[in-house]
Image 1 (cartoon, rainbow, N blue to C red):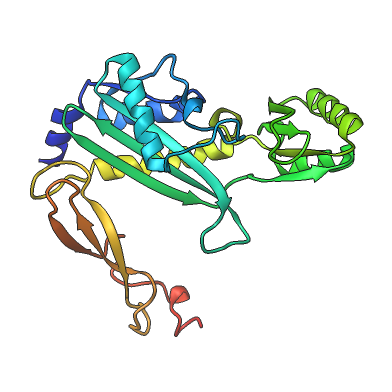
Image 2 (image 1 turned 120 degrees about the vertical axis):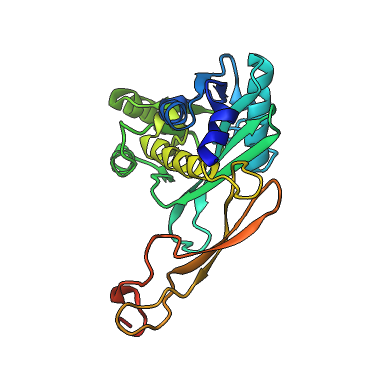
Length: 286
């Protein structure tokens, strides 16, 4: 019933992808294959109006509301009733504070069927960072750590300044020419990673992983109402160790809830195993 319902809801429908930074490169093939939609880029959409990583325009909405607004704008421009948008944030990991993290939200908005399905993915796979420099050697060191030139950089006269800013730098000559100009004028300058998806392959990979999570959620249909989005909302540890039987920190069961009708179920052994490897047991491997 689940696959039949998905085909009924999405097969051959037009899906607009709300981005101006190349995210369609990873989103389009996945959603066309897994949902059977015919996706396209929302032409003429300027998502920067809702906020920029470099600070020229402040984001005023939370990430999921921003993604929803992108979908709505894409629908208005295209006339479509099915849209997809993502929104990312960068900063310290919420629990491992010493690590930078990339949080991505991806939303599918379906006006025809009154569906809103989203996925969130938090990853420490990011080159996010920035530093002040007073010489070209320091600029070179940062560029290497930031995976330049495959990953773009931004130069400013100082941190958070909008007085002089150069974005989207992917050329060695341009980077050091602009860096030298800033040093001559100001004595020091600031370099940071450009986190826009089309200039950051590491972030693009995280967006792809978020898309996989969203598709898994969409393809999980509620056993009660058959609508997509039947997903885990909580996990309970306690999977027993295969040697000693002691409960481990690994998931014993998940609680799944339908976002439409509220149907709830407990799914035991969601990862396909009934015991855990002793290496993850606090008793066998303290």
